[in-house]
Length: 488
Ligand SMILES: Cc1ncc(COP(=O)(O)O)c(C=O)c1O
Image (cartoon, rainbow, N blue to C red):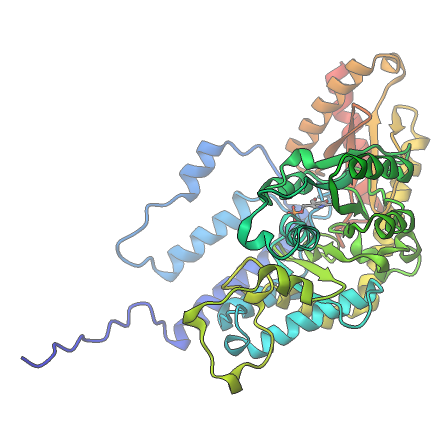
């Protein structure tokens, strides 16, 4: 019997003409979104079951037509989404999403490079490495430094902490695990992001291995108390593996005293990791760069372009002083990725991190940098910080509001505090919780919260190039309006 030769099955292979038709419809929708973004409510009151009923279509056996596809996407985009790019969106630390960045994501997906191997992605790998080297240089790291892209701050902190763990424990830990080793400890301020504890958990150190170092009145790590903790642990036989300094805390934008922390790392032989997931891009702005002095002494830095470089989610960068440290911590041999000796050229990013296949998330950052230029980013980052200071001044001018701490970087924390309630902290907490919930449902602006010294505050974080002074004035007006209705 001759082999039975399968007939072609071309269903999934759209012609370029059809691809263009879909592309044009999608670009049209994108344009409509941009046209209407400022006039749409930032958010709304989305009931999960109603949203599910509207968007979770049955998977069809047969294709949907172009009209049905665009209608579905249009409903998702215009009716069932929260607009992080809306000028009134001031919550969490979510970059607004650049327009060239969105185009970069489309091209990256269309091109479909796999950045696990240089031979699968020559241009893309070189762009990603170049982008990381550029940012490492902007942070003052020396020649030989570099890094690559990951999905977000959680990963960009986990990966260098793995390298720090391995450097402290010795290469054997990769094969034998932590058995028989002295306790490895990590130090971070009480204001550090929770992903640091989760990283310690994932790395088998346990989240208790992260020593929570108290902060000063401006929410910056106290170096004297860091020193005490390092000394206490060393005396008890533990090995201080890493200190995580935060350059731009999530709640208030505080920057830990990097030079003092770096000096202690030198003294105790600990890896200095700087979580600059949010604050890192401040190095681009002349007026803010001095605040991050000392970042150049880091062994590793996490920076999230999807925060203050305004890239669409998701993309972060891990930067290391010595790229070899990541190879030491992550390289593996696989029989199924063999290459002839003469073909072993270029960096295989799958050898430097936890992922094997990797997408081209760096392109959205790169394209935006090329399209806008470095100076436009520097100007806007500086402007965001000026806006946060302006909001702080507005708050101080209004007797019914209270500033909870001086604005730092582009974050301002405040609360509604009418004279009649000033002495009742519990009542102010409950009131501000309700005010925040009301603002989030209101649709004109959108903020989130911080808890500072146990007290609930409203928090605006400006990492949005569409936000201007009028939106901050509106935030206070909307907050006062809802507070007035709640207090009655
Ligand atoms: C300082 C800091 N580190 C880490 C993270 C976690 O980043 P991601 O949400 O991108 O994982 C955040 C998030 O806001 C952050 O502000």
